[in-house]
Image (cartoon, rainbow, N blue to C red; front, side):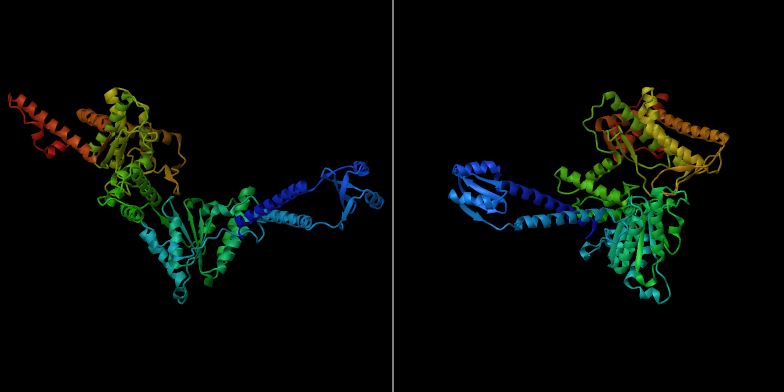
Amino acid sequence: MNVNNRLQAGMLLLLFSVLGLVGYNVYLRETTPLERSYNAFLADLVQGNISKVHVQGHMLTAVDSSRNTFRTYVPEMAVLLPFLLDNDVAITGKELAPSSTSTFINLFVPVLFLAGLWLIFSSHGGGQSKKHTLPSRFIPSKNQRVMFADVAGVIEVIEEVEEVVAFLKNPEKFSRLGGRPPKGILLQGVPGTGKTLLAKAIAGEASVSFYSIGGSDFVEIFAGVGASRVRELFSEAKKNAPCIIFIDEIDAIGGRRSGGHSTGSSDEREQTLNALLVEMDGFSTGENVIVIAATNRPDILDPALLRPGRFDRQITLSLPDVKGRLRILEVHTKKIVIAPDLVLSAVARSIPGFSGADVANLVNEAALLAARHNKDAVEMADFEEAKDKIIMGLARKNVAISEKDRRQTAYHEAGHAIVGLLLTDTDPIHKITIIPRGRAMGLTQHIPLDERYTYSKQYLVNRIAILMGGRAAEQLVFNQFTSGASNDILHATEIATKLITEWGMSTEIGPVAYQYAANNFLGHGSQARPRSEMTAQRIDTEIHRVLETGAQEALMLLKKHNRFLHKLAEALLVNETLDAEEVDLVYRNYLRESELERQLRAREANGNTIIPPVLSHSPQPTEAAHEI
């Protein structure tokens, strides 16, 4: 019986014992006659009001002439009997003995009560005893198992762990040559990349038992509980070998030890870690037990845990690329009804940086949106809406926005889009919207055509200019700045700081790293190295120069293409959302008009008054017209 079942059984026993006592007391109150004094009984007897009595020991139950029943205590029954006979009272009697009901209640209810208390306290305490069972989980049948086919986007990782599956299926193949299988595998990566799913798939492919427990499940307030649970887990696993032990979030117990300066809580965690190290060293070759652990904080794990002989292999699960996202989409869209014209590759390209869990959530949100609109299948529009909802939050369609704020937002987003469109080495525009979502009043979304693993200096500098484009448009059109550019300035400052202090791309500072990325997958940023005040001042000056250069470049481009800025902003005010094709259409119309004006000015300068052709029949712009 596990901990939860024991606790439930104890609570039920306590409930039954309390209900039994309450029910028995109610029964006694309803069935026991009222008591009357012995003097009152004698007075009724003398007056002839007593018709019948029942004697049981010194207790006498009497029935008076009004058929009322009452009880009284008789001090000397032998003295009373002649008076009863003289008054023609019917006398019955019974041997004095406890009833079977009272005997049952007096014996059984305390036993139930004590048993319930024992079960409850043994489920909470007793952490150092063998009565505390672990929440083990087995895969009972094949149709409930997770297989490698259910894990998409990590082909290289699957190839790496297939050897573990082969060992669990056929250990003699490796042992005949003297080889030793890995005792432990550490899966590390950002949240949502499928670490837990991969561990289940390994057990499913090998058809072995699967023990799953979280790192925090080993930690309790009672001293010695964690170490006891570790020993019990490994003891049970050895009995059911071959099997897999999966410890999720192992950093909860596997952090670096404090070197003798630990507090009470960390001392308990260190005892648990020591027990885990000892148990992993205690495996023999023939036990066929593989330990798999998952973490997104490998930088804080104790070195003794990562040495060969414990976690021999450390496998990193990265965010999937476009091909991996496509395979993940194919896996999850099998569970929903999709439209025939839905192109999953287009969806995969539009979600860079999504993890496997994010993709699964995207598919589910799209299906829910399609069902909400009573559609027969999930369409591309549902995926677009679900993506915007996940990235930016729920659309605030009913929020009251003044026309002034709406125009400022339109010009702000148009500024971002135009700078990104006119600069080279940038990501193409995917969508512009001025519909408020979450805390954002609008969004200009750029999506790369290919996966980017490294970034050039020109790309980063252009990215800063794009971020400054919204602020530059506000300055150019409204001659003022708003707080809507705060997030843009924050991201631009972060890029400029890394460009100078981490990536060594500044000609003024040189190839020196004054900060470095932290070795974890939770995105906590960078850690700074010691620097002098003079160096810090030089860095601040260079960061300011890079940001100011990007802002001036954005302002210059918008001044040169002022008409394009107004046209795109007006289109946003009318449609609220523009995709890449619609932005390109506005851009082409702007180029046609600019070309016609140039031709008209040239003719006027030459004294030619020929009317230019109609705009709709104007020729396509030449390559020179596209050069900005």
